[in-house]
Structure formats: structure tokens, C-alpha cells
Image 1 (tube, rainbow, N blue to C red):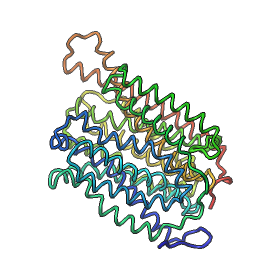
Image 2 (image 1 turned 90 degrees about the vertical axis):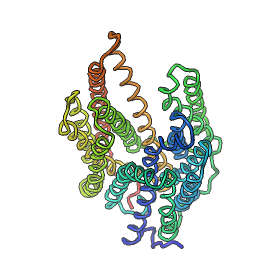
Image 3 (image 1 turned 90 degrees about the horizontal axis):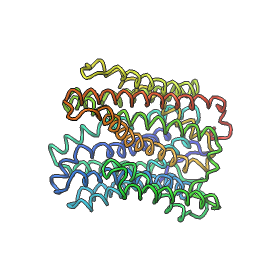
Image 4 (image 1 turned 120 degrees about the horizontal axis):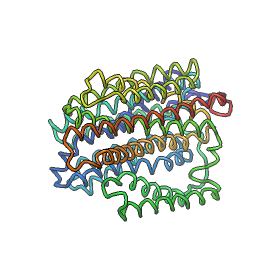
Length: 481
């Protein structure tokens, strides 16, 4: 049963129930991305596997999501967004049950991929459903709440995961999704609007296979370059194969009548500039989030608990700022909020140029607050602007591409930042035969400063790109209603 309204507009009450279901699915998928990390040592011990193998529980999930997002974005345009989203709830819940029942690492990795299928179905449609359910005047507010629940999922995951692993066992980090998934699916069947904009076109199987294989090859190389060595045959071969398949995919898509990704969408400057600035923002913020704990633990020698509390400032500030930014962008326009958020991020990275081997709590926290506020300011108006710049028959694939850009930015930022910092630190210590701990700490801070300056430069570039959209502020060709 679906509760729908006339003229494709949902009543005020119904559209907020729709948003509630989207927020529930988003929270569940985001929670699962962060809750698993704290259980990896326990799973490694109980399943008797090394940490290099157990990491595939996380890597397989991220790779599968990144590869499948455009595919399900396209299928959502063909089958209907509500249908794909609802099925995603079921698949994710089933995958969670099966993950909890696994007794072998191979099975667990396989079931994580099944979870990723469900998560990608929801992630590829959540923003599209919001945009099609809310008028322009309320989209920023709705997308701001979406950003808040992304932050809450990230924030809740480690704490809840630690509690469950300690008190009832690692399997319950997966079982906790089951009641959420059942409630979310039932609510989706009741409140999500009937799909009316389905496109009767053939699916691009050839393009889907080429895209998936190319992305897996490239992301495997980027993600595991530090593990196998960047000059190892497996990394070079994976990267070469991924690039070749991506080139073939592009040629195939240009000749397809109904391609998986219609490259003409990149002629839309609002879409292109919005995605480019988002990619740079996610790469920088995730790089900072990856490197900061190393500085806090290895240089300042903070406990894991203290590091977790300090890092929580970022998602907390994001959760508070995102809905306010969304509301403000609805009233005053998205450009100033999106660009201002990126400038806040820049200040946060520049603030870290002052840290030393003896920095205090108050010498670090302002940077986390600035980046949390900046990220919360940027995401809702940018998402609203991008999603509102396309026609109704494109929002499914655009939703998938938005989520893909976000994941690619995070993967690239995490992998390349660690690589760059390690290389810089090795160069600084190259003339020292047996460096002392003090020299190791000092070299880390020096390399950390260089990386933070680089992230500040990236954030400035993202701000310039974001602000350049002011000439395309009119959304007359997009989803005005």
C-alpha cells in the first residue's frame, strides 16, 4: 500500500514521513560502515585470520557500493525509485542476518557484498526520492537532515560497536540492523509514492559489466597500493586493466542508445561543478579524518578512547550545522552556504599548521570544529543545487553518480594522504640512520603540516569551483517542483 497525493505532490505530513524512512535507511547504511571497524580485531581472532585478510570485510563493502551506485541509479529510473529503495531495505536486512551467521571469512566477505548491494540500492535513490517529494523551498532543509543522519550514523557506529562486541559478541553488530531494516521496509511500503516516472528502455548490461570491472581494478590498486607495494605486479596490473576497461567503457557508452551513464549530463555545468567541488571536499575531509588519529595516538600518545572523543567533535558539529545550512540555503540561496562551508574547512586545515609534538587539547579541537561546521554547511546546499539542476528522468542516475563521487573522494583521500605522508616522512628521515622517537615524531609533524597545507589548497580550489556556479543560479531547467 502506498499513500500518495495528487499532482505528484505529497502533502506536508506524508512527505515528512517519506523523509523519516529515508533517514532511517541512511542511518542504518552509515552505521554499518563505521560499526564494523571496531570489531575487526575480535573477528580476526575468532575466525583465525590475519588483519590483512580481515580488512576485506570493510574493503569489499566499499568497493561493491562504489561499483554498483550508477547501476542502481540507472535501474531506479527504469524500475522506479521507490521500488529499488524498498528492495534495498530487504536485501540489506537479509545480508545482515547472513553476516551474523557466518563462521568463515570467505562467507562473511561474500555476505558483506550482499549487504553492499542493498546499501547501494538505498544510497542510489535516497536523494532522488527526497528531491521528487519536496518543493524547491524545502529541499535544502530535507537534505540538511539527511546530512545530520549521515553524521549520526558515523558517530554512533564506533560506540555502539564497541558496546555490542564487549557485551554480546561481534555477530550482533550485524543483527542490530534487522529490526531497523524490517521497520524501514514496512514504512517504505506504506508511505513511499507510487513510481510514475519509469522509463521503458533496455538496460546497458555491457556498460554495467565494463564499469564495474574497471572501477574494481582502479579502486583495488588505489586502496591496496600500500599493502602490496605500488610497484608490485598485482597493483600495476590491476591499475592498468582498470584504466583500459574504463576507456573501453567510455567508447561503448558514447555509441549506446540508452547508456548506463549519459555523458551529455556533464554538459550541465551546475551538475559538473557541483560534483567536482564535492569530490575535492570529500577527498580532503576524509584525508584529514584518516591522518588525525595517527597524529593524536602516535605523536601525542593519547588513548584510543580519548582520540574517539576528540574525533567525535567533527560529526557532532556537522550534525548540528547541516540542517541549519539546509534551511538557510532554502531562504537565501545555496551558493554562499556551500562556498562558505568550504572556506571554513580551509581555515580548519590551516589551523593544523600550528600543531607541534606537544600540542594541547585546545590547540587541536578548533580545527575539528571548523571542519565539522564547514562540511555541514557545504553538503546540503550543494546536494540540493546539483539534484535540482536536472530533469525528472535523470535524477535516479544523478543520485547514483552523486553517491559514487562521494565514495571515490573518500577512497582517494584516504589512500593518497597516507601514501603522501609516509613518503614525506621517509624523505625527511632519509639522512638519519637510526632515528630516535623524538625525531620520528618531529618528522611526522613536519610531513603532517605539508599534507594539511595541501588539503587547504584543495579546499580553496573547491570553494572557487563552488562559487563559480553563481552565474548558473537559475534552476529553471531542473526540478523546480
